[in-house]
Image (cartoon, rainbow, N blue to C red; front, side, top):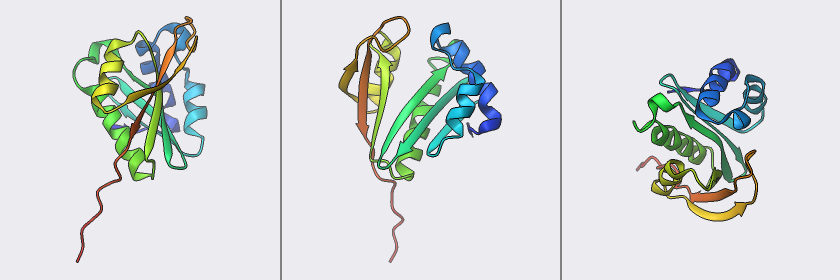
Length: 148
């Protein structure tokens, strides 16, 4: 897993296109624009996964997380999510939010296992008219070094 930067935008777009329905996939310019914003960070996994998040104050948002179908059910999504949550906490975030399609059971299970709970609903959020659940989780501060 490597940190995402502007040079990774095209690779992220390719993974996103394979991971999401055509109407929801982001292109390279969308990833480049996001990565150029203050507080945005991501991870790219060569096995076909990505996560993109942003920090604003003490809150974080998972903007997108995707794993190509051939690499699913191998723990890659869990590892990407864990990396994003750890980095968000290290950057000072204490709570994280995301949206997920109400019918996306694998993603809902992943997020529930990571401690996310529903805090809202966005009606007709997705291009296909499907609602999104807004989920949130509390982040633990990074472990402080002990000294004496």
